[in-house]
Amino acid sequence: MRKIAILSITFLVSVFVIVTGCSKENPENAETVQTYLEQEFTGPSDELINALKQNGAYPPELKTYVEENYKPLVADLDQFVNRNLTLIFLRTAYEYGYQLEPTNIDIQKIDEIEEEAYNFEVEVEYKKDNQTNTAVVAGIINMNDNGKISIVRDMDDGKLLEKMRN
Image (cartoon, rainbow, N blue to C red; front, side):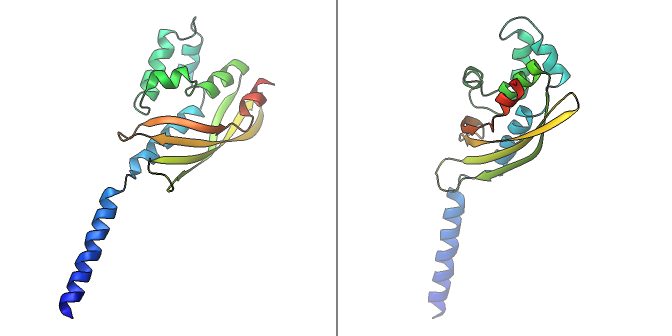
């Protein structure tokens, strides 16, 4: 009887170790998602405003800003820039005189898929001329095996861009 109990405990511990060891979840990935969302919905800062004032679609100052702020977070920076996954909200805020600030960021790991992915929802305040409004932006962020963001998808901006342009 004692042998069976010891074997059962050994088996359960082995299963636990295997399952835990095979899990791809990395707590640092949620921090990366948080940082990315904070970057996307805070500002524009004075540094970014100065970079956006420069001539050209992608002047050196803007390239430096993007590299410093996004390269540590994303897998393929060129892809993110080309797909407008960086600065789209901050560039629009700058163009129309708004300041953005996230008031709540909710990040939930999606457990139903093998890759590490997160649902996100960001409540964003957008301010101009002493008027403050809010919009909710939601979507999914996928991470690669190196803990970097590989894609932002299924984004619903809660009409934030449209509201800032009107």
